Amino acid sequence: MHISSDASNVSRRQFLAVAGSVAAASTLAAGSDVESGKPSPVPVTAAHYLVTIDVTQNPIKYTGENTDTSTSVSMPNNTLTVNNGDEVKWQAKTSGTHPKYHAGIHFTPNSPFAVSDIKWSENAPGGGVTKNPGSFYYCVGIFDHLNHEIYADDPKIIVGGTPAPALQEAEVELSEIKEKIDSIQKLLRKASKE
Image (cartoon, rainbow, N blue to C red; front, side, top):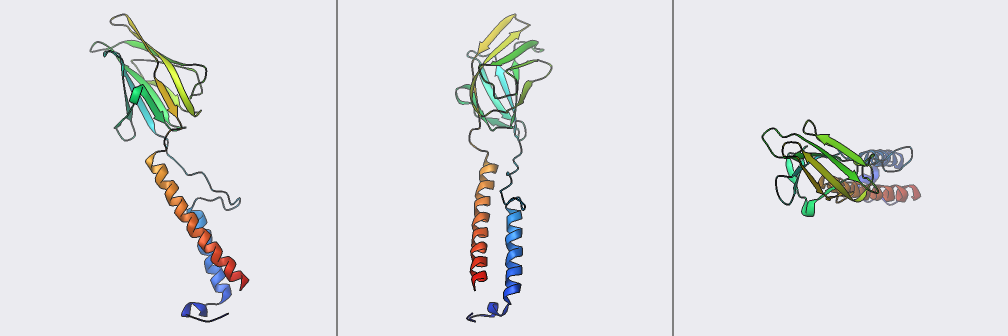
């Protein structure tokens, strides 16, 4: 072994111990399961959405809100895009200062939720947590008790759309950490051969 710097004064055993500790710490920081060596799933906080169906407008207008951040969500062509595991709830805006209504949504033939039908009234929004990725049209029916009108529409929900910015950021960070681990592993292999 050729001595070219002060760093080479460290014994091979000390180097391997330190490098192994750094690699282990980097692996844990990257979220790997130490026993299996497989990456652990990146914990992602589920988002919570509230969709308002405004039947006082013609055509019916849909607005979405991320209730975690109190920000509006774009719904082009009455389509909501969410990630699997996110919670989506619906409410209706009907006539009168004290609206009374019954509403329901029906998914056919498949539902992004555990159920095909979701029903609610003015007392509480209706919804659930998405379970199945895909693109789903659904039927909306709202009965306005004050003016005795029934409103129907067929919007769309896409589950498993573009990942949230926090998830994209975490994926970039994970890739950088993996590169560091690969570099340390190459150094360890090189040191063990010498």
